[in-house]
Image 1: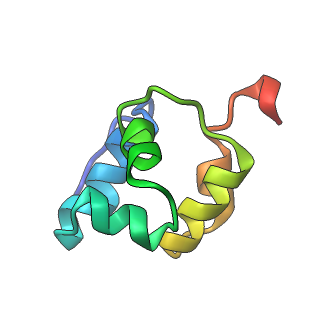
Image 2: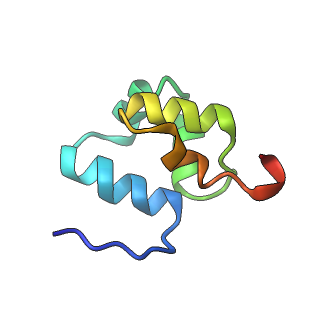
Length: 78
C-alpha cells in the first residue's frame, strides 16, 4: 500500500499517484490534461502555483474530483 506524507507537494503526489503507477511520461500526462508540457513539468517541480484552471485541467486529465487539486491553490488565489 502506498503511504504518502500528508504534507507532500502536488508534484510528488502527481508522480506517486498517477505517473508511476500508470507508467505514463510527463509529456503523455500533459497531453491528457490538455496542458503544455512546460506548464505541466513546472507544476511538478513546484515552480508555479496551482490555480483554478490548472486544477480543472488536472482533474479532467486524471479523472479525479477537482477538489483534490483545488486544495493546493494558495489561499490568496481562491
